[in-house]
Each structure stands twice: as structure tokens, then as C-alpha cells.
Length: 392
Ligand SMILES: Cc1cc2nc3c(=O)[nH]c(=O)nc-3n(C[C@H](O)[C@H](O)[C@H](O)COP(=O)(O)OP(=O)(O)OC[C@H]3O[C@@H](n4cnc5c(N)ncnc54)[C@H](O)[C@@H]3O)c2cc1C
Image 1 (cartoon, helix red, strand yellow):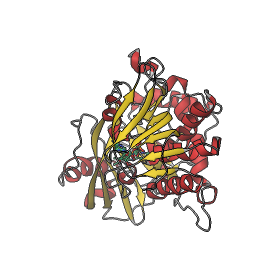
Image 2 (cartoon, protein in one colour):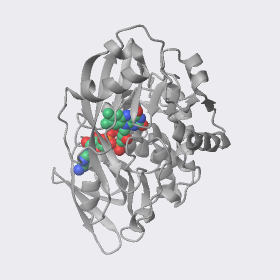
Image 3 (cartoon, protein in one colour):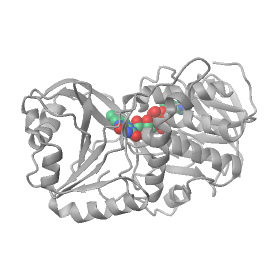
Image 4 (cartoon, helix red, strand yellow):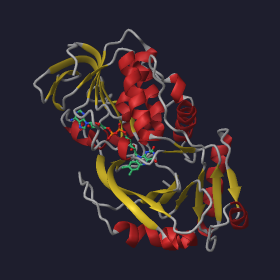
């Protein structure tokens, strides 16, 4: 905790990967800003970022998400040097292992449509028939598959390195991290004046940013702002195959099986989108055997003898309206309150672009690089979903 005192230009609530990226880009956009980040837990024990599997891909359908991925993946590839602080590199262990979406015949046409959209944004995406899939990934059982989409320049990185790289660099540029929890807001009719922390400290600022991830719905409520972002438990497993198998890209299917190579084994899971919402970190140690193993062993028989070595749980910050993030100001309520939350499981990979976007909006009053206006809060108020097509 530092002793810098308010007023600040910007107070960011939540110092996870999104809040730290926002702080960094705010100071890049305008080095003269006084920026503080309110983060209660410097160990990030429950933060989603440190429980993420690190995947980064361009396989989306909304132009905003594709463009955010393109910028973010490039940024992550150069992160180690770009984000080095004095005398200290910022490694993120980027692995260009590729992504592979696989779908049954009834989804092949929509996968092809999605591939064309990504290609129109300049992405390298190869549409593969079942026999081409078999030739490229010999261990795959391609029965009942219609097509696959392979993006060889996608990959994965170390979320811990990414979070701490942003945080350290933001601090080097002048950000103040305050170790406390946001508790309440002091707001007038048209703007937020200050926030109060559990330490009793009162923070005045010109702008406030809600970057509290799975906690952002709760945070918004304390400003009187309805935000449909809720926590949803998701399991991640580290497992080994049991039989020899070639290194695999990040494989995803329509049932939301998602896994990738990790060292000598594999990391991944099968997302249960209907999981009960709430702050629940309990681990179901039978989930791998009952749900993940049958799916993975069916698609890759080499996993028949798979062994799960570890299961952990983390929270997706689900935007219940459409599964896409909310990025922007609460223009009709408290216009100096900004939100960057609700990435619904894509927040690590989009942190660089989302951080830059919110920084542009706060500093310049408009987007200067990627136009993220359609991801604004206005669609929540109008109850108009802006969802992805196909695999989430
Ligand atoms: C198992 C799993 C796998 C995932 N895999 C991927 C992946 O492959 N690729 C990908 O892009 N994403 C993935 N994600 C999603 C990704 O982790 C999140 O989208 C991302 O971490 C969101 O970042 P954040 O900063 O918003 O949230 P967090 O990292 O959770 O940070 C939020 C911070 O807010 C703080 N906070 C909470 N309440 C308050 C308060 N009242 N006051 C101040 N601060 C507060 C918390 O302490 C926390 O540090 C995965 C998530 C899980 C759980």
C-alpha cells in the first residue's frame, strides 16, 4: 500500500489483468495522469486471471473480438521486451501452438462462414475436411466430424506473467496500487464523486473504472448500476494421455471441450455453461472422470488411459445478456463510471486491447484504434444482445 492520496484522475477498481492493463494503457496514453488501482489481494488467490489456461485466439465472429485478438496476440508476442521494467524482462512464455475448432457436419457451414469472416480481417485460418484433419492430427478420431478450422498463429501464454507484467509496468509509469477493497460510492445525480474503501480511505477521482471481473456485478450494484455480470465456476485439469500422442493445438468443440498441450501433458476442461452462478471454488474431483475424460477419449483414443493429476476451479465472469464484454461509460446514469468486465472467459487474451480501448475512451473521449462502441453498456440497457456465433 502506498501513501499517495486523492484526488486521482482515474481510480480503477480491481487490479487483476484487466484493471492492470487499463492502468498501463492510461499512463501510456497520458503519462501525466494520476492513476490508482484498488486491489485487495496482492496474491490474487481467487482472481480469474491466475486460474486461466492462457489461450489466445482469433477465432471469433464479431469484428471487435477478432480485432481485439489480433492486437492482443501481437502485443503478447512482444510482451517480454515491450513490458520490461528497469533491469527486468517480462516473460509470458508464449507458445504458438495454434487453435483448432472442430464441429459436426450440421455446423460445418456456419464454421465456414466464420472462417471467411476471420479471413476478411486478415487472419490465417485453414478450413480442414475430416480427412485433412486426420492427416494433420493422426491421433484424432474424425468420426461424425464435419470440419475443422485451424489457426496456426494462435497459442497460449502464462497468465501470471501477463498480469504481473502489466502491474509492474503500470507501477513503473506511476500507477499507485492501493491494497484495499472498494466498498461504497458517493455519487451525485450525474457523477461519481468518490469511493470509500474497507480501510476507511476515501478516494476522489475524475473517472472511475469497474474492472472487478467476476465481482464487477457486485461492484456495479454499489453504484446503483445494474450489470448482468455474474460468477460461474469452471474447472481446469492437468492430465496426461497414457499413450504416446503428438503435440496438439488448443482444441475446442461445440460441447465446449477445450484443451491444449502443456509440457509433457495437457491442460483444459469442458465448460458447463449451465453451472450454478455464484462464488463457489469447491472442486468436484469426479468431474474429469465423469465429463471430460469420456469426451477427450472419444475424440483422441490415445486418452483412453488418461490420468488427471490436478483439478482446480476458477470463475468465469459471465455477461448473462450475450457472453461478450461490457466496455464503456454509463452514459445515461453516471458518465464518469466506466466498465470493462464480462469477458465471459476471454478476458486474459483480450486484456491488452480492452485496456487500450478504455484508456482511449477516458483520455480522448473516443476510440482511436478499435471501435468498441457496440460493446458499450447501451446494449445492456436496450436488452439487445451482441453475441458470438458458433463456438464460445
Ligand atoms: C479455468 C479458467 C480458464 C480460463 N481460460 C482462459 C483462456 O484460456 N483465455 C482467456 O482469455 N481467458 C481465460 N479465462 C478467463 C480469464 O481468466 C478472465 O476473463 C480474466 O482473468 C478476467 O480478468 P479480470 O481482471 O477482469 O478479473 P480477475 O483476474 O478476476 O481480477 C479481478 C480483480 O478484482 C478484485 N476485486 C474483487 N472485488 C473487488 C473490490 N470490491 N474492490 C477492489 N477489487 C476487487 C479481485 O481481487 C481481482 O484481483 C479463464 C478463466 C478460468 C476460470
